[in-house]
Image (tube, rainbow, N blue to C red; front, side):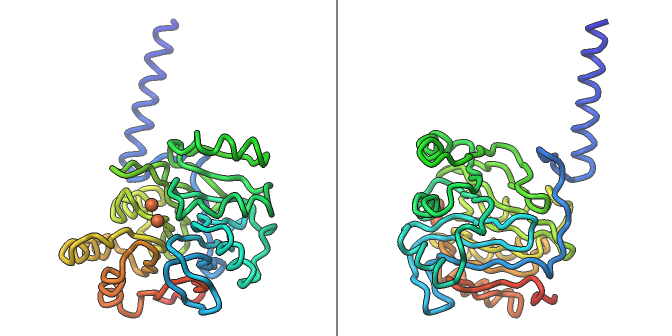
Length: 280
Ligand SMILES: [Fe+2]
Ligand SMILES: [Fe+2]
């Protein structure tokens, strides 16, 4: 009887895996994220290598605030705590309004501002890639912060999910995916696992093409030919808008601007990407 039950369980598991693969969507821990109205979504770049608003300080690193979901999410924290907190103040962003912090990967230019931020708001949950978790034990203990180690794709908010940790030769990293009525929005830190693979994963998770990709695409050491190839692949996958910055590299940013034309968004610290203003 026990053996029969075991065989049925295995059969059901195989059917579940087959069905998930057949529908082209990846299973997510906690279920699927609900679609959000793009008009509600605002992404504010807080920390970047480039300035959009000259009042803000620039530095190598990335951070942005995502509003319009059920919770307010802080994506990465830049590299320098003082610069990060100064930019928050200039943008009139109150640390208390942040419900959750999404750390894309454990490189200083994305996590360096975390401690200073926790001094103002230790209440926010912190999502980190699983491989980074030993480094966060002390933070969790010292600040009483709730740290969630992410391995597989999972819900972060009712309207947002993590891609799950994706490996690369450099480091494990996860990216944020938000399904909207226009398509998926994907936010990347450094995109070490490869921007094309991340976009592919975002599409698989949401069953939608990527409408907007924001963040560091890590192409600064790529040849011009390789960058052009990446741009072509993204366009073939249906990516509509791009807002590359941080480690994308100046040459690559220029090539994205040429290739995407009016759906290229010039990013940088202080830029607010309003979903309601994207009309394509
Ligand atoms: Fe980076
Ligand atoms: Fe990095």
